[in-house]
Length: 525
Image (cartoon, rainbow, N blue to C red; front, side, top):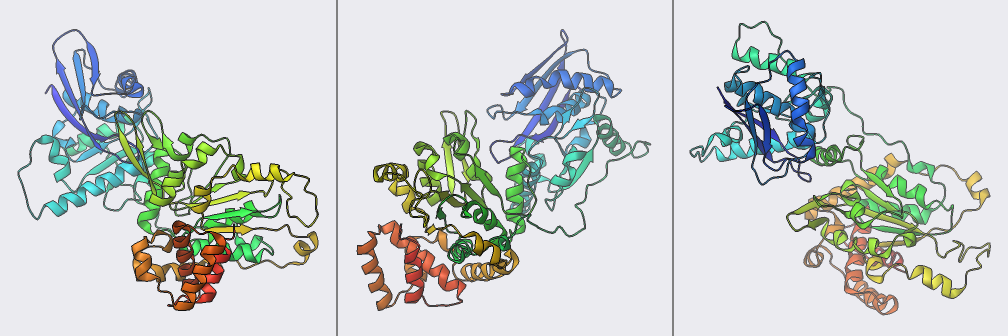
């Protein structure tokens, strides 16, 4: 046998498209050529693969080797293709039976001694395999002829994924995919040899099963740490219940960052699929993540626009995607470059970001809650009872004008956070815990899902007409507020969404004047 096919996955953005590795041995001077848009790490794999094969007790073929990575127009990067390339070479050279490879996909980086090292994106790979298996089962109702051998794996719903043992537990979170954890190239080959020859004495790989212990989603912080600040705590609860964006304005040390960091702890628990989606994003980005928790991303004001929303020559996810299903916190908001803040305007509305380049276009999820904090002036003490502020009016105006009106108009809740006297901090008891507040938030969120199948912050103008009914007094109140606060059409819709959330927290079907008044109080900026 001088030809073999092995199946694997590349990672492009947050997706894991299938890659078919074709290996052909031919006569000629010994050489190894890799074609099919390999990046540098893939081109360098030939040296790692050669050493790994020899150190695992196999023979490296002394012939001309051509390796094609199909589809040829899909860029491939990373060292995750090391293992499937090595398996393909061994199969093409007759050291492994190619027939047993059809039901497997392989990913893994090879060390020079043949050991397998952890790779990024294993969870995205497992989710892609499950999606293809489900699609195959759906298409089974209308069977069709398989076009070519490259489609065999898509038509087979029982695919086994072979990964490095360090990736096994992560990939096994995806139900419906059999994950085999391997420690070395040799252990993978022994497993394949045992399938080809049932009488062989070689050991087989075991299916990795997720831990049977119930994983408890826990946070290291709690809302009970916040003393006083009842107005700000109320706004935080409203923001959590309806998915609204929030801006804290107050002097240094008033608790803005403290409260922002507690927002994820009162958000409703992630669903199983949402938890997988978030974990998959962090797997691709090779970042640490406590499985099942809401992400909290706090970025420094020196961040670039590309790092914030994503991009690069090959688009990669940015902070707004890493904050998907969670919270993005921007502290010292006026210190950010204005051009950086302006790129947030479209994702705040669309809940996704599309990165376009000359040769590619990629869409990333960006359904995050924006929480920002700022001082009222350059020194931070404008309006403080201590009268410490010495900033001139033109300085304050210049400082506040760093934020554009369109960006501020997209923030639902504008909250002033005053400094608390030390005596109040010493005498105040701990506030409600995150668990208590989260119960109310979850109940309000469930009402929204039952009514409209989405959170209030995602309601379109036409859906607002359907789900937000106002009486004559409430309409008159909004008309007066529009004149006084100069509400734009966007601001008007955001007030309605916040009022709907306040009513949901009160378990009220109708929106009353009290709900509208409270919602308007958060737009006073």
